[in-house]
Image 1 (cartoon, rainbow, N blue to C red):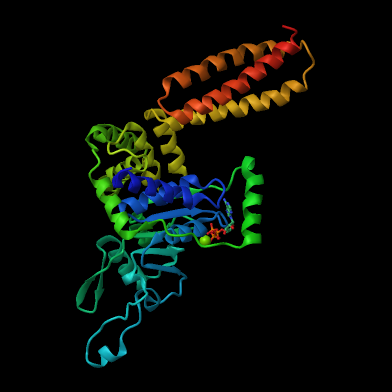
Image 2 (cartoon, rainbow, N blue to C red):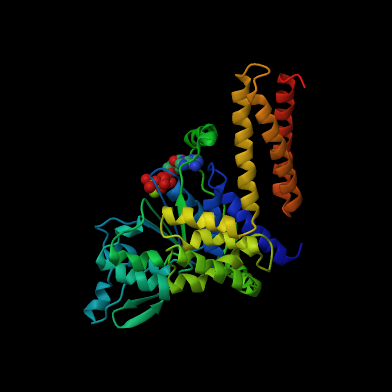
Length: 380
Ligand SMILES: Nc1ncnc2c1ncn2[C@@H]1O[C@H](COP(=O)(O)OP(=O)(O)OP(=O)(O)O)[C@@H](O)[C@H]1O
Ligand SMILES: [Mg+2]
């Protein structure tokens, strides 16, 4: 394997390892992976106890970098984040902060509940995140911050926090684990209780991340530009507005998606990454997801349809077991599932994605089994 491929493999491993101890947090891991590869900030938003902080902490553990983490409250003082004022220097008339081990020296930062930022720290945070500098008295100091990760329970309403919110190129809305995964959730949580949480071993160094970022910036994005513009127009039509900053940076998100998929060229499917860039809140996210499924020929669309078919098959299985043999409704089911069968076969032929083909094969087996049972009940 060439070193390029090894590095791409490491990036994928980072995402895989990140979600490992959690149930159903693959998408969240992907979003944090995109942020790390692009050197952009990311925030996870969702109800309490959905592993947002745990994921952000783990992401930092998986990177060998200078790291700073802090939980913001309304009462957090600037000194706590940026370091205390150097008293000795002040005596000589110089206003400088002692920044060791504080945010100004961090490459990766995790600031939990960032919207608690009060006005005393907000402005410094804004320039630090956007320009990667802090103003120290009279001078401007460059900071090495690569990516800042945050977590919050809700989208901020306050006008003064909108500029801060806009600085997170990646914004993801974390949903609680769905019912079919509750059993695994209990197992995973139990394992953490019993064994304790063990820190992850670093997978990526900052040098490797910078190297990966060079790959991201050399990805061929031209072929996707028109389609992206078309999508932006649709979003705008639907009342979903993207700030110019986000429009401008969105190609980077697509390029990072390509790199995580081992490609140096963006393909249509990478547009799905816009889900994590465009939405302001959960409602917009649902709308955008719908538009992307319509407009982008993505495996995700096929996977979703197959999952729906799968759920439907299981439900009908349960339902018909209660029907008596020769019930006339069975004839309708037979007809309907024979056409579902054709649909699954077509999906499998149309996709270029191995994962979709494998899932289609599994679903097809279940559909066949259901058809068999119906036929038996109908004595066919
Ligand atoms: N999907 C999951 N898989 C495994 N464990 C989980 C999952 N969700 C939550 N947990 C467990 O719950 C704990 C609490 O998660 P965490 O503190 O990260 O939540 P949070 O989303 O940051 O909540 P808050 O918004 O209240 O800060 C995790 O450390 C983990 O042990
Ligand atoms: Mg938390």
